[in-house]
Image (cartoon, rainbow, N blue to C red):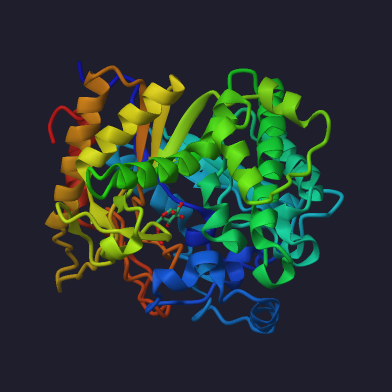
Length: 482
Ligand code: BG6
């Protein structure tokens, strides 16, 4: 069988991790622009973002520094995108997932009319993509909401954000309707409870009840997602709107039924945002969770109808690693994962950053998601952060990366052979970029090396790694030759 003929091979990036030019051409500051460089971060410390306070945000706003606020400089994609797009074209990309920075279009999120320079920029980016025969896949919100909305309203905890976001999206749909067919609403929507500031603009010290605000933010995002799905279908008739979930595949630590139950509960809470976006209603078990935790979600009378009537067309997800759960945390060896800390599986190897490498877990994830949702799937992030070294003759021999992808692709194809309807695969990330969690450059994901170190020093020149040529061949043979 193998992959469909029109399988969308490609890569995924996010505006705040590549563009730089954080205060250029009218762009306003976003939550990403106050994220600091955290090389020694212990993931336990960024759970709930304890380091993000009203004071730390004020401090950040007093400086133009781009050294310790690396997302402000990114990899200078803002200026270098034609060169990068050419490289993606050379790789044979059918698609590229990018995000639109809300703050380039509405710098503080509340302006009456959009910033023309921001619109022109993305128009030019899409033109360049099409020139290279690359179909855009666009995330409307990838960890970069206007900082003003976080400071003024505590982000998505406030219902007002729904209309502001809707306005931003509608401007994008109208402006880019001839350029973009595939859209995603919120990147890793389930991450609100892991990093409420990055994900939903919630500043923990402004919340009297953080958990309550987080689940309110979820609800507001669900309604926003449904409304913009409706708008997108109306404005762009053949468009496809997807939700985007971090697939945090969890296994029981043992066959002890208590471990099995702990793992079931973890997976249930991980699925929940996609459940709402796909089925158009809250899962009963989650309503019970609200009750047991004393959470009261404020809803308008029409909300449940809006959710029911405007579900997504496909389910996209990121997959990096799996973890194990136990009824008793003392039974576990903890390890880092994608913005999460959890039990380490002794059967698996880990990356330099402690994330377990579990290709079979990707197959399991595809089967679970397809079985649950019966909707087309799209893998929109998968990859490994590794330390690369540039040789004197400007080569990068990254066999470890090739091995990682090869094993994941084998399992992905097996899942497709079992009947999973998979639209495409975009690696995270095809080019080195600033890490979301630690803001490091040295945690490299790309097939393309960027000569820039953690403090922003270097030529910013791009070099092809060994994996570049390997991925190019995989795409050319549609996965038949790995
Ligand atoms: C995902 C995010 O959580 O993981 C990306 O959607 C992020 O933005 C990626 O970059 C990898 O995480 P990190 O922290 O290694 O950059």
